[in-house]
Image 1 (cartoon, helix red, strand yellow):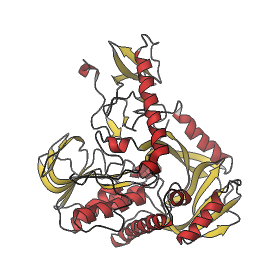
Image 2 (cartoon, rainbow, N blue to C red):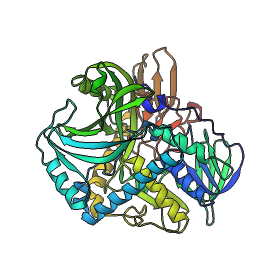
Image 3 (cartoon, one colour):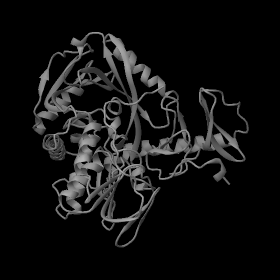
Image 4 (cartoon, rainbow, N blue to C red):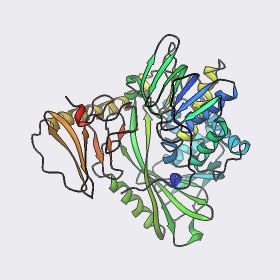
Length: 501
């Protein structure tokens, strides 16, 4: 069973108000993570009236389940971008991410945000020869990225070859987002928590949002939700939704907590290790074991493997925190940032892979500049309305093949007439009166049941036994045991049994 993330455990309670009336603003931002709060900061500073609508609590979604690592390279490293595009595009990506990184550092300093920000080196390495590091070294040289080749590491992991990238950083992302939000919340920039957007309609001169507690009319709307809300086929078909896991452990020996960020490749599978210290208390963090959302038979096994991996290399005193985080991989390796289309009043920021802390900040810079009529040097390569079939073809086919398989699985399940009674600790999809029902009984015997059909585009959900959620394998929407939306493009909760007809 998962606990909360280390960032949620080491954060502060926020108390932003809930929307309780109809309002009109210049820009409405859906989502109160690093993307939404940074965008609000930049738009507010230019004099616009802004409202941030957060379904739960500021920063406690994707931002509060991230790694807390800040770096200028990307999830896929450097060479895949150069190989798919060219060196000039790679240099532009590095420049854009460096500017976003710098904005985070300035905000920490200017607002005196207590978020354990620390400049560190990043180490990328492999445990055996695969030519990966050789290619990365060549690409870093061509791109002009400051780096050093290394021949050893100060951590007890298998090592063959690696590179150091100095001047990167770590922080507590949730404390950062909470601190920034507190500094910008005022009459010009209202931040609303526990305000869930349920419907979006766009007309010629405005966008209207219907929420659970009030309605919003805005000249522009920004989807700062990690993946766009609603049925946005042009994005959902070129994004792969993945979950990745993290643990935070205390070690027997305090001298073994390493400085730096370590990205390693163990049997070609990536993992990351780094330390975190808050109020004199130290932890070792390990992140890895990704899989497509809703397509793991045993989510808890991913956490067990992380614990085994760390335990074989460090003397663990106690595993204190275990959590999962979600990301969306773009088929052509670059995020989608900006207007949905040339005539739209809605903006999206998605496809960050596991690079969302920096890409989310970059999105804020690009989108705010576009709304203010300024533009940036990076509008073209990250353009949200782009379509590059040759760049995305291989991944596009893979992601959509997975979606098709999940639709078919749902059809087969619908033909099942009977299933054994759900036991304590179990979850099953059963068929009742021609409806697929998602049923879970907790270890105390309490039974919950909702529709098993995702409200986004009709896929059948799958139970995540580690986090006790119903996850959609098609586009990454996630729901609580009682059906409330936790994450993803779905706007509405799973239907209650009394709503099925």
